[in-house]
Amino acid sequence: MVRLSAGEPNAAVLELAADLAASLEVAKVIGISARQPIQIYGSPDMYVPPELVSWDREQIDKELAAAEKEFRSALKGKVAAVEWRSTVVTYGSIADYVAEQMRAADLLVTEAAKGGALVDGSRHVNLADLTLRAGRPVLVAASSERKVDLRTVVVGWKDTREARRAVQGALPLLQRAERVVVVEIAAADDLADARTRTEDVAGWLTGHGVAASARAVAATTSEGDQLRSIASDLELDAGLVVGGAYGHTRLREWVLGGVTRDFLLQPSRCSLVSH
Image 1: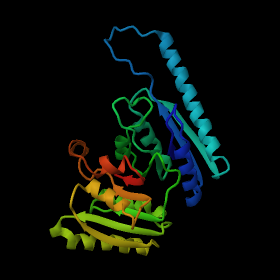
Image 2: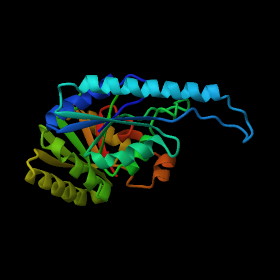
Image 3: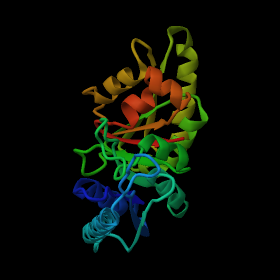
Image 4: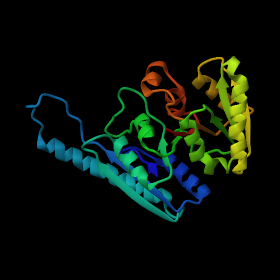
């Protein structure tokens, strides 16, 4: 499933999804988009002109129709079958709707989170909420990427359920990678155990046909910054980073920062996350 932002161009994420679908030889790609009506805040007796509501609905219908047209045009002839799903979300959020529809797909492809207080929440999904609720791996595409570079993949390992699910969900991609490096950032007194853990993961991957190796690295700064540095290292230059999302509570990551918030959901390269 590939998520489109209504009312905005989606060429990059669609090109990436089409390339990925061809590589994985998938049977079907589902396009999905949603919009919320205009959000009006005021007193209960505030008058809202019906013309405004009608105009807004017309604009939403036009934007969703344009997104469907863009999706079908981008995927035409590149996959065996396509399907389109869209709605106007009047209750709940866009993340709720997309996560609910993930029952029909193995993987969600979406653009990276768009920050800033002025971002229109009626068009853009809350990517943190979506990742927590999807129940499927989420491939987050950097805005500049038009394909998933699988020459080198870095797995950011933590010995958690979320990391295990991420590696399992990424397995079809890892099997197509030229090399996969399982990295754990650990305190100095935990490095020996970290080596054992990463070697276990690399061994499991090797048993599934993945060219995997292990690396335990002493912690020197925040995990997000250090993992970003490792992935960007000239020796690796990873095109994809795989990791578990929200091993800590989301509140803790929001207040203190963390790998999920600071790196995986706003990537400079593609990332695959799972909760």
